[in-house]
Image 1 (cartoon, rainbow, N blue to C red):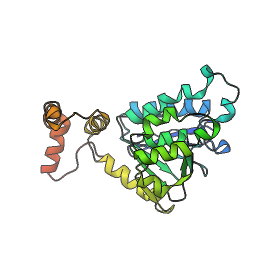
Image 2: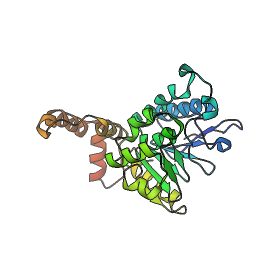
Image 3: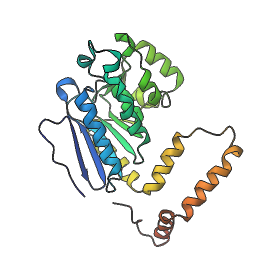
Amino acid sequence: MCESVAMADELVHYAVAGGTATITLDSPHNRNALSAQLRRELSAALTNAREDDAVRVIVLTHTGPVFCAGMDLKEARGAGAGDQGVNEFPQILDQLWTSPKPVVARLAGPARAGGVGMVAACDIAVAAQEATFAFTEVRIGVVPAIISLTVLPRLTPRAAHELFLTGETFGAERAAAIGLINSAVTAEELDGTVERYVKSLALGGPKALAATKALLSSPRPATPSDGFEAMNALSVGFFASEEGQEGITAFAQKRKPNWVP
């Protein structure tokens, strides 16, 4: 187990304790906007979490009243197409989406544009009821192109059309209803709900969790019959694996498997 020491000038803090890597956006002066420095540090933190064998679950959270306001528009103003920060943003969304370790987003406040894209890229998202969301891109003359790749698989089609086209603000209760987040809870319940998800995720075998995440993102076969051969191979492989045998043995012996923190 290790824990990093936050530097005074860093915008993203990284700490590991009890098998959980907590990545904290800490740029409240610009509402945790995705500046070049924040993007760089966030990507590095996600890489650290992915490569650290001690990490079982990742929590993405924030300081200040806003989770993330999206791209840093001050940096975007006057920049050419080749210099826009959105060129680097797909890497961050991909790191969240493809992380072999489950990622839980914790929102105590609003998310906008690219911030919503990050929420959608996480496996589980919990927001305080006071949190709000909006796809504000069209209102400043741009397109929610990159975030559509993580957001559209989550949202119901009607809601996606309405909210992408109008840019209107919506609350956490509706975000849960349309599939953007898992839970909208009171501010007092936020940390407890996140902790409940983290503890549940840590009970899963690391390799089984990674394979299940890949399964959830894979294209579905046209019919169940088309997929049975591949899925049977995946299933029996894990039943016979070292991790699978440890889990089966632990169940029989009424003890926790050796991967539980």
